[in-house]
Length: 251
Image 1 (cartoon, rainbow, N blue to C red):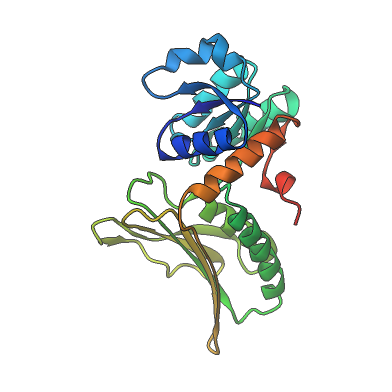
Image 2: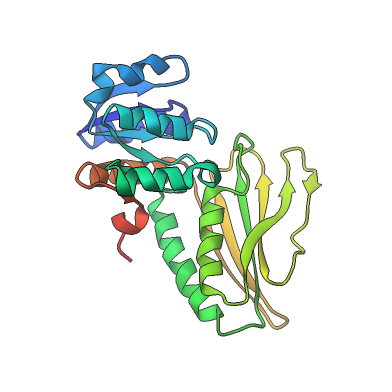
């Protein structure tokens, strides 16, 4: 399979290593200093482009890739609030293809399945209140994390007593704290911690007067994310439309 990379930071380099180890060819690498290569023959020859950039550049990258006739696998977050409807229309009505996930880790896919099942059970037990905390490295620009939002949305969909999620507290890299996780009873707070070089920790807690039930996914490195992105690219090369990890992993 021919793969183009959009974004060549730590994730891009790790994806490159894993893709090559699985026998794929990297035909084009686009970063901030060679945006003109979106219009190159090398980029257009790719079966799939894997995109890990920033909330402010992701959607524009999708448009450039689609213009070149290239399918996209993207792990960029923070763009959906502004462009979700545009992307859905492009994929569902205009024949474009995007595989998007807030997290490509196989472990997170399993954790997500557990999260949905636990929320379904906990809908019967109103004495438990639920909160979420996500922890990431200090370079992460958006908060809450895309994975944190996805997990929260799964819970809200299954808990009748929760109307929506909201931002809880934010602990900055310097240790200062903004906001609070003490929110309205019908809201689910997602609190964010930014420290060190943490790849990603997501914790869901159901607390009652009697006890607490907690589930956590703790990534040791970005390797799991990179492998998942390459697996998604292999899947996307043979499929089209708006795709997600629910299509890739059947739990």
